[in-house]
Length: 387
Image 1 (cartoon, one colour):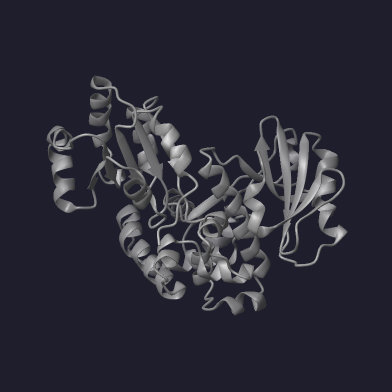
Image 2: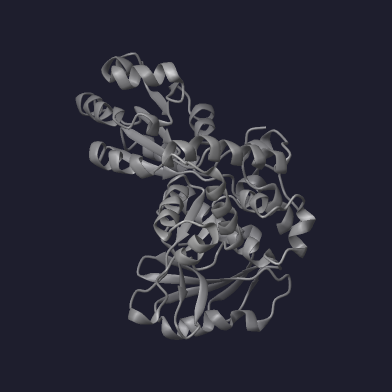
């Protein structure tokens, strides 16, 4: 079963407007499937193939001349210097929708795209499946715990893979292949220790020095490793919202895992029922909700524009969504029962941030409209917040 992706509509629109469309996202998120299965008339080449990569590196002109018609080039980050030659081809033969590029590591790739393809390419971000995409395919779970444990990698749902085994293989592949290539790890166990500690601190304001002490490396190394995780789309950095608040606000970021299934695996969760009893159940629920909102934005071709807010007086909201000059405030609670006190943070934030247009509570209960432009949403539909 092939699950259709919501980003497809935006991809088709961009192919009519730009000669190159670049799709970035984590490994196994479905980038190749999106390009190959849902778009007709494109040839395909993969730069993970050592022979093709060698040709692309040693004779890029010959490599491109052998690609006939419209083409998908997979894992372009493996040969970023190819982008300069694509620029020459595009300028010589301007035709929208000619190239689709995919990449699973954005650190060096973004810089290369900016230098070579500025104005010639649109960039899309594809994350693993959303709850809405699963629902449209007829896949629904009874509880948030089942969604979180199963995760959102397309292969798990399309091929009925066992989540624990799938994420064990995903994790090993990522650490042993991608991370070793990117940072020349001498001791993989320290990196793995940091990754598991980050899982335990998902959604918390990061303290690099504390993390460094717990892992046994310096804070500079921690920052570098986290930047690799972010660039590989394993982590999503949620920055603080401090517009017009000056020095009163916390200015360190939070981090969330882009796939909550990987988060659960790293926490040692091996069945959905464990989540209910886990002391981090609230953090797992919050991670799921934040990333669902992010997926919705990315699937519509938007930039993230997501933030959190906390000041030194304890005023806090979990998520701030930028919507033009207005913002929307979101509180996230794993509770199944609605209580007015859950809105306390939203109301306090609205009193100090006059540009709040709407406020939302994402929780585990039934959707309902409340007064003062406040709405309670079940987590299954939290991606429907309009911006």
